[in-house]
Length: 90
Image (tube, rainbow, N blue to C red; front, side):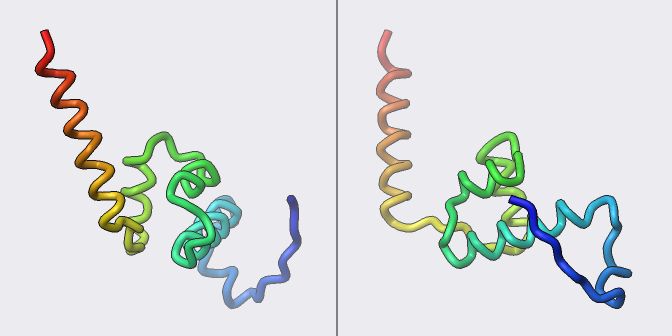
């Protein structure tokens, strides 16, 4: 989708014209993630980030709290347990 915005010159002077599109996209992705409208995976897809680690780094750099709750922790613990079990097998 393509949209047109009329931005005041006073605002535009703070942005590089070459990076404006990317900066707006990043700001929208951050806001949507904060509002829990999109997931971290969707942030990565929208911003073309190469990995979950890159998404986490981007969100941290942007001072955004990661959505990580007890269910996520338990899921990670189970995954780690499965990996350890597989590594112990001959």
